[in-house]
Amino acid sequence: MDTQNTLNAAPLDAAAAAKAAFAAVEGLPFPDDIFTAPELRWAVIGCGVIANQMAQSLALAGRKVYGVANRTFAKAEAFAAEYGVERVYRSVEELYADPAVDAIYITTPHNTHIEYLRGALSAGKHVLCEKAITLNSDELVEARAIADEHHVVLMDATTVLHMPLYVELMRRARAGEFGRLRLAQVNFGSFHDYEDVQSRFWNRSLAGGAMLDIGVYALSVARLFMESQPDEVVSLANLFKTGVDEESGFITRNARGQLGVFSLTMHAKQPKRADLCFDDCYVEIMAYPRADRATITWTADGRREEVKAGVEAYALCYEIADLEKAVAGDESKLKLIDYASDVMETMTRLRSDWGVVYPEEE
Figure 1 (tube, rainbow, N blue to C red):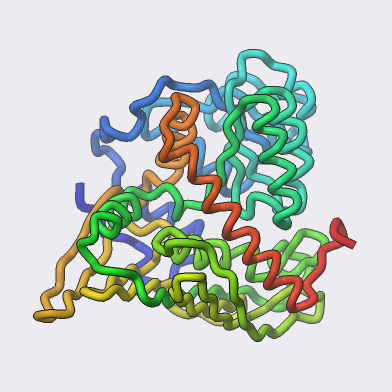
Figure 2: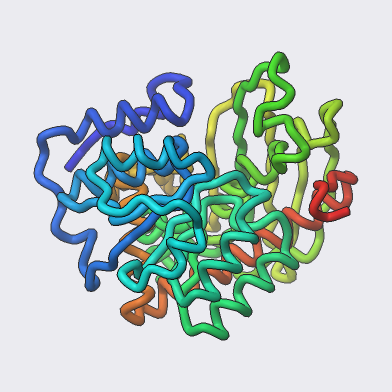
């Protein structure tokens, strides 16, 4: 299936891009190679944009969300009515206690994640948690310990970790086709107006700022292809008046000398572009958070090779499928949380360097 990555065509916001991607596959048969593990019964916490995309994604596969919990019960009822959800819970505790639920997708703001992770994992539920999975590395260490104690799977929902394009590129990189990675250069720019300083993008009480919202994508792309996490970081950042990071530039280096060069901004558009520079080629990935294609330029002869894998519209299906595969014992999927932990350590270190501290951390 060949659907043009809509994020390449125009500077759409994430919600508009997802809508366009869904439209591109409307009426097409759903691929039979995505959901290959035993199906789990899913519930969702939160009724925002991502929760709606999850329900829409499952619908593409002829599946439904089983249950929903939300801080505002009326919104949960409306969500259930729209997507045919069987159970509407009056509290997350009621959800945790439901033995029919196998897995929970947490889609609420960053600063609420650890509270829901504690409850869901302790109740023996597998959890897929929206990015940023926690506020900081200490919280993620705690969440992983709870998951281990209760023998359940914890997975980070950052799309980069799950898109088939990255699985294919990593396969080829590890097979030695590209040579050794020397440098990853990754950019992400979003435009968010200054008028609403209480929005989640600028509000310190909602864990706002560029790092947790978009930096997680940039760092995840680089980490997938590096041989180890960075141990050196240098950076500069501009903070917004609310105390969150507005824009930043930073460079990382790991013990093998592999460099990462990153730029982020929350108040200016720039291409969502990742360039992975190897000995024998460089790989260009546009609109990389949900990319389904990349271009390889070979050093020896300048030849350009197009690589296509997956479909942008199925981004959340890949996340859900990966958790189900992990529950079924797929080691490659179980290890994805290790990448997430490495990325969280780097994000925590950078925020500490900049003095970006959230109320929960004071």
